Image (tube, rainbow, N blue to C red; front, side):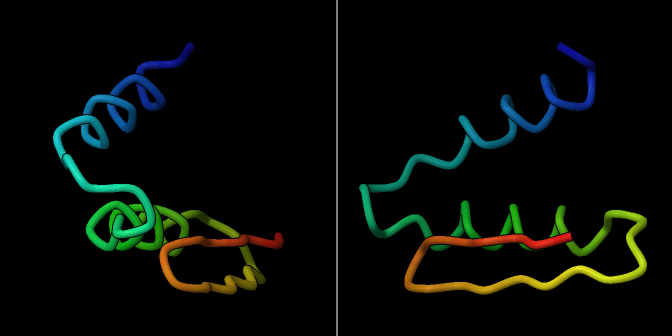
Length: 54
């Protein structure tokens, strides 16, 4: 596992949230997705779930 993924995993474990109320976790992941060097990223959200299509 790369250092980047370990860092993300550790950061996510610092955000304790109840199931289906993971709003801070969702925002963290959205920020990460939007920081990726992709020409076209489509992101769909629904409640606390995210779908990323590259």
